[in-house]
Length: 588
Image: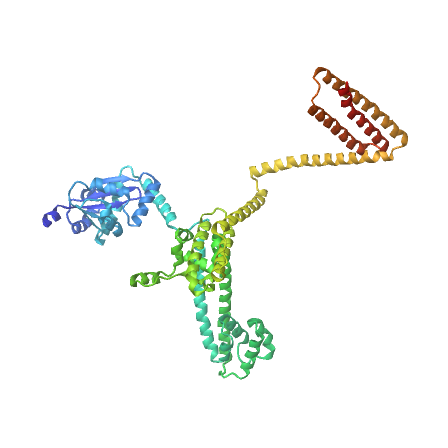
């Protein structure tokens, strides 16, 4: 049975093109026979097409569909389009040996998840590479509609879109720069430590006491570059030594130790060589400081909240270990907590021991400040806040470090709670205050951005400018009118006092005549209302009296501003007469 199955199977080749999937079959039953026949049939298309028949071809529906299939093939997955293509052309019950160029794709086709029949055997042997090369050469002749221009256009388009999708670089969040910078800083720290140990070992032959007095590598290198030799370490250089190490007692100790040092003498050539080496290390230290400043400035634009919460180096290491800021934002808090301690975690799972409490976040200052029994609690709390800060940084349109400050304050309050028992704010309260403050900051940032864009030729901005310019004169006119009114009132108050007595008498007489006319009109209206209507009720009388007295008082108030003393007295008498008018009507 096995021999018969082996003889009956046909060799087929799956070819993935930029325009679609193709399936080519041969009449041969062994892959080695096909490989032996390739030199004879690959001379031209006619002989090649006699040996390799196009059994089926399906084109991609769109550029997005082509990119999806290409990503699936590169990851070793069977796309739905490929599965339906193979099942439709290889589901006739015959035994088939299917040759695939990619090994991971061949393993995926073999798996039961692919859903293909058991009659299909899949292989990805390296001996078929020459066959696929010839298929790629002659494939455009099989498809009449596939011209050379269309083929190149499909290949270039798919290649560009696939490369663009695979390049893990986000334009808006330049986290790749952060990853490269923290890797550079780690490498520079290792190199600086190596060079420093070499300098200490080298200079200790000449001045061994210096390493005990100044153990710091950076200060040691600066001192070696300054002193050059033990003989030049005199009292005259005491101030220069003190400027480097910032300690007068240590500087004095260095000078005293140089006088009684046990080291051997060195030549001028040795001193010159050592000085050149220290100059290079000093430049390296300066470059390291600039790289750190660059990392801090870059993180303030990429992840300001995470940077404010746990510091620049720990934040950069978390992003670097996750691969990108987006990947870190997708991690839960439990993963962030042990990120960087994977070996310890899997060792604990394998040996059924205790799992680690923290990974890279151990370098945060909060873990070091916590008590031994609270390190696990504070690491779990800090990981939860890091997850929040990372997601805010990754998915916010306008970035600010307000949330990072509030999250940092929450961690500080939790530390105080562990130490003293003082209850901290709830997360809802802290986040409500952070949202209000962040809205204010975002509003200010938007206003600042609009202010910087005011010089541009934007139609909307010019429209708003015109409206502002049109509104400005009207507001100025209103202000001028108010000023004129105020001045006229002041003049009306001052003029009666400065006017002569005759003019004031004439003014009073004119006012008398006007008021008499007003009284007659009021009496006439009141008499008509009394004749036409019934007698007013006590409530109506009270309302009428109140209205008349109110009008009289307003008249008095107006007259105080515009009339002299004599006029005021006469107006008061007139008001009293008007007030007595309702009583006379009631008597009538």
